[in-house]
Length: 403
Image (tube, rainbow, N blue to C red; front, side, top):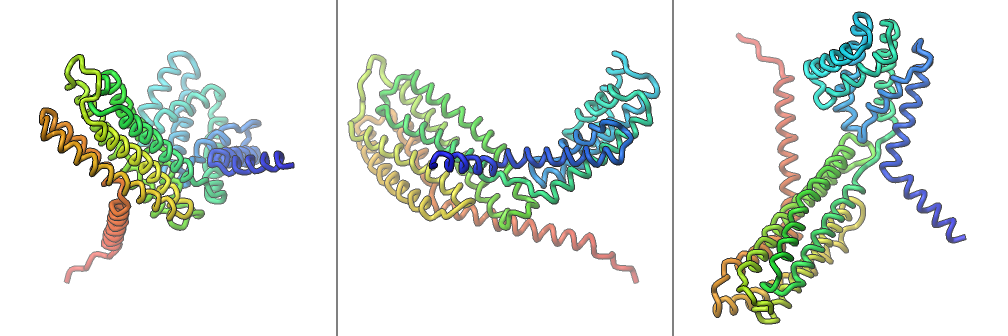
């Protein structure tokens, strides 16, 4: 009996996922558009209406309202171009080329931006199934029906909130950064093979691509919070996610620089020296710093996800504990390095750079720094909102009459 209940629970969770919700909304919009088009259009199979509805029903309500008009314009422009070609020249290989060229040019002229290719796609679809101008006008009607139904579905059926996937993406990024930190502390300082150090540097550089992927997921989450009736504190959620990703991005850059420093230390090692050239206490202190910083990075990501979903006190307390231990280990590491540099000052620049990079990561992850950054963003948005309000009032205020 336990297994069927568990399966039902997993199914319920799956149905709450944004991807499933979006699929249901798109299907509903397409079916409704087809039903309405059957009653209003003379076409026996008005498939342009559900096609347009699928295109208009975007992932978020904000993107629908901002891009729906341009997308509808692109489809209408394509249909109008197809009408002209169907009346004048019909369909052939050279007319198809002219049709595509004209559609792309018109798409830029009517400023549909990223939907320029859809002008040509709509024109080809209509020209391929339509050779009569009257039928093409029915396609325009179907396009308008699909756009209207798509907008209506977005207004009546609230789109999904993509905060959960964005939080998971941030958590995955932090996990990769945590693994890199752990690897950095496992090999004794200066005793790393140059090839291994270079491979670790490449791993750090790949974090840039990971940050870009998370940024895409975060933009989708930010759009899903705008104009969404299901969210009461959309601005706060957006800023929590955005400032959290900004912090991790800075840490990723610093980690890449730290890996570069470790690579330089490996290259500066005398040829033939295969053993550690620093006391064991230095290596142990560095390992402690990287391990606790790795846990702190994961705790920071958990704090970001918790602040947009549940109570964040436990995640914040864990982050503070790990940062305190990491800073204590950093101080011990710095003291041991200082004694070493006084005896052998050859690589003091690289050792100092490594300490500075560790300090920067720990500072960026600090709870106080995060609260300060979040408050600054809230103040900036409040000032921008007041500025827009004053500008709007100034434009709406009637000009004073002379005399």
